[in-house]
Amino acid sequence: MSIYLDNAATTKPCREAVKAVTDCMIENYGNPSSLHTMGLNAQLAADNVRKIIAKAIAADPGCIYFTSGATESNNLALIGAAKAYGKRKPRIVTTAIEHASVKKTMDHLGEEGFEIVRISPDRNGQISHEQILNAVDDRTCLVSIMMVNNEIGYILPVRRAFYGIKKKFPQCITHCDAVQGFMKIPFKVSELNADMISISGHKIHAGKGVGALYLKKGIRLEQRIFGGGQEKGIRSGTENIPMIAGMGAAVKVLCGNIDQRYEKVEKLKNMFCQKISEIEGVYINSGEECSPYIINISVPGIRSEIMLHYLEERDIYVSSGSACSKGAKSGVLTEFGINDRFADSALRISLCSENTVQELRILAENIEYAMERLIKSK
Image (cartoon, rainbow, N blue to C red):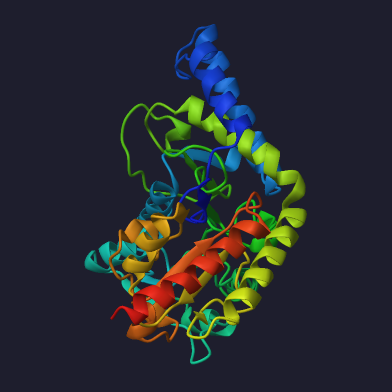
């Protein structure tokens, strides 16, 4: 039986999400912009999911906008806000460990003339809320900080940083890429002090190709996609109602037991880290300040791709880093102070609450077997 431990890349859709998608495609296939009953029913299905997502983060349903995924949500939020608010305030603050969909969008904005300030982790591999706040000034139009780093699992101090920013610079727009935190770490929009929040469906046991952007009332975005004016003109294009329905079903399943699932996954992580720490030559890159859902380790002497394929041959699936990088170095591990030798041998093990103790024991055993065979064969 396959052991799937790459949940930060994508998750297996839950039965409820699959059923919601299928039912919608068969029975509720109208265009939500159509004025007849079939169109109205499709629109009602989308609006019901807005309510489900909004309830999960204590938001107003009218602030939830559907997109094709977190990459689009991040692009829409960052470019849209920068263009709307950055004419007289060209400074944008972010971190050096963001997902590629934020990092490359910032690169683009830098080419457009914006001043991009990227905060790196300190010598202890941490980013403090003071670091973030100190980088913001009265010329700053936008701050974008991820909730959980997707490669190492580091939890950033978004709440404290955004609270300080809003207190000192209330006009500054705040954005959080919450992809690896949504439905894993409980949060309310009022506590997060984020004007914009990006989330994704396929990271929470829904399908690929759907995401959402929380946009606080009163926040303006310059339009990026032009067309029929769907999603109140924020994001034109016919809404993907079946996948939206699936996302709503997944959120409904998950939102009632976030704390219990966190505790279960934390126990799995602690057990695995204890087991793997007993193997000489294996190093754990994810510290206590990291989400239990992501464990990054290094096995110096065995390149990541070699170990990954060794495990794959035994039906064990992990990652060598962010799925979006397709094996290319992202630079995130270097930012955390992990040297090239360790970065070249890094593996990302990412969990969900369906994983078991037995699966992680088998993974640890196979890593030990791989070290015996691959290192000695050199």
